Length: 322
Ligand code: DAS
Image 1 (cartoon, rainbow, N blue to C red):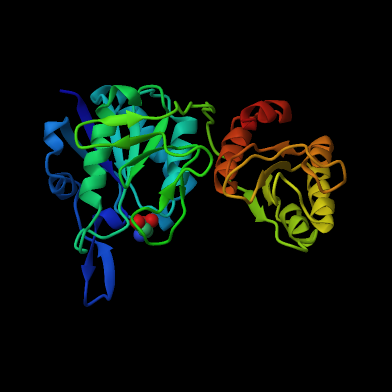
Image 2 (image 1 turned 120 degrees about the horizontal axis):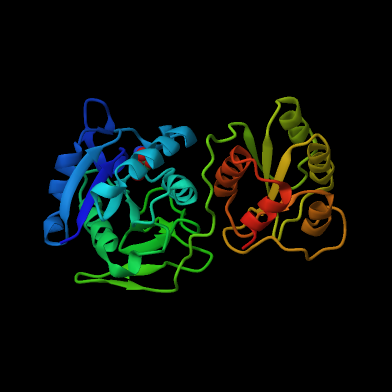
């Protein structure tokens, strides 16, 4: 039987209602969490390691790097890893882990949209599904995965798309990578682990700017003035931005910031479709890097890692290309 190490970091999956406090609070240990998933030991030998017990809105890129180092440090102790994590930033942790981990062993993140004491708590079933996925032969070589609501998602494409419902996690780009059944996991297309970087540190000042109608140059000038190392811009559609934003982005490039352009749409990729200033093509020609189909928050993490690894603009273009 394979050995799976469950690493707990916190989140709603490990919370219970505290009426006096007026809501959910961290309250479940790693061991109790594992014990709550009835049948888990039919699938694997389970070890549990408590990494932290925080809501994931308090998770930071630096703590994600600590988690990656912890997993790599234990890589020889298990055949795979399940990380329990809050849902708010789960997609970010999953993507950065995929980007920086040395181990090729399965790493599966899961959590819960309902607390452990809630009616129809989803945590135990998600945890069992995550272990089933981690021991599945099909998990090998698919990078870091997220399992929620009976679906397996690739770290690169998964997004939390609803604030509260158990079916919050989707992969709008290509759909889920697999489905978990009572007796097995059935895999869809094969997600690939694209980015491999091992930066000694992350660049810490990378801004993320979402364009809206009429966005001006001022916010980009603020990034320059703040000494940002890099800037991710979420443009409209296939990477189009307002005239003011176009001017601000060009100023940022001229000031030496690394600029990555993605789309604010939930699916699809930026593309050189329009010939005028404000389109992705003219901004790429001005020195921006086209960020493919990545979400803004994931492109920001990849840019933090790429800058930390000292990547050139051309290396970044290869890294971000879909
Ligand atoms: N408490 C939020 C978090 O930790 C939500 C959750 O965990 O599901 O991300």
